[in-house]
Length: 384
Image (cartoon, rainbow, N blue to C red; front, side):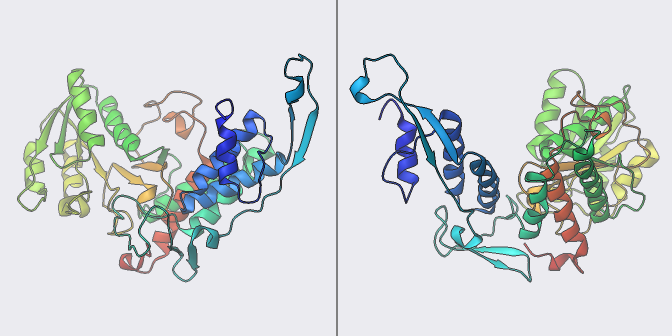
C-alpha cells in the first residue's frame, strides 16, 4: 500500500488481526511509536509501553471516514466505521526479563539486540534502569502529571517531588547544608559541564583562563575550544602521565592570576583512572585559597567511589548509576551566588539558572537512583 504504508507495518506487528486496523493519523502515530519502542526489549520499553497503555485506553474507539471502492468517483463522504481495540500492558516477562527483588535489578534474556548469552559489562557507557527507579517514576508519568510551576493542586505533588529529589542528590554527595539552589537539574552531563564553565566565567568577568586536562570529556574540551574561538576565554591543558593519571602538582602549577576555573574529571570515562587530588579535595582547597572556582566531572565516579570533597561545582549523570538517559545535575556549593547566571533563559525554573519546565519523572528517577547509592552500606555493594 503505497498510499498508506503505515497500515502494513501495523498489520505486520499485530499478532491477532488479519485485517488493517482503521486508525486516524494520530492513532497510527501512537501505535507505531509503541510498537517501535516495545521492540527494543529494554526497561525503557516497559516504561514507554505503560505510557502508551494510558494513551491507547483513551483511543480504544476510533472513527474514520472511508469511501467505498464502488463509489470511488463519488465525492460524498462514505460511512463512518467504528471499531474498538483492547490491549493489556506487557509484563516484565514479556520483555525477556526477570526481576531480582533482593538486588533491585532486571535480569534480561532473549534480547533481540544482544546475543542470547551476553553479560553486559559496559556500565561506563550506561547502566540499566533499576526497577525501583522505574517504579518511582511511574506516578509522575500517569497520575501526578501536573506542572511543578502551577499554583493549583495538580502542581503541588510534582513540586514536592522535585524538591525531595534535590535532597536525595545532596545526600548522595555527602552535602550537609542542603540549599535548594545547590542542585540544578539538567538534560545531560554535557549541559551540566557547559553550565559550570559558563557560570565560572560569568562570575569572574575579569578572569578568562581555565585549567583543564587533555583527557577530559568532549563536553569540556569542545566547549572550551568554542569559547576560545570566540575569544571569550583561554585554557591550559595539563598532560596526563603514562598511566593516564592527572597529578595535583601539575594542575596547581598551571594556575594563573587570571584563572577563573579549574575543571578536572574525577574518573576518566575510558581508562577509569581516578584523579586522587580531586577525590581528596587537595586541588579544590588550593583553588579556594587563590580565589579560583573548582569543578569536577564526576559522571563516571558517582556510585562507584566516594564523592569528591570541597568542590564548588560537580557534574553527575543519571544513566551512569541506574537512572534513565536524559537527566543530569550540577551541584553548586552553597554560598556561590549564581542567581543571575543562566545558560537557558525562560520561565525562571531551577532558580532562574535553567529555564524550561522541569522533567519531573526523570528528576524523580535521578533522586531515587541517588537514594539507592546512599542506602548502600559500602560503595562496593551498590548493585548495578
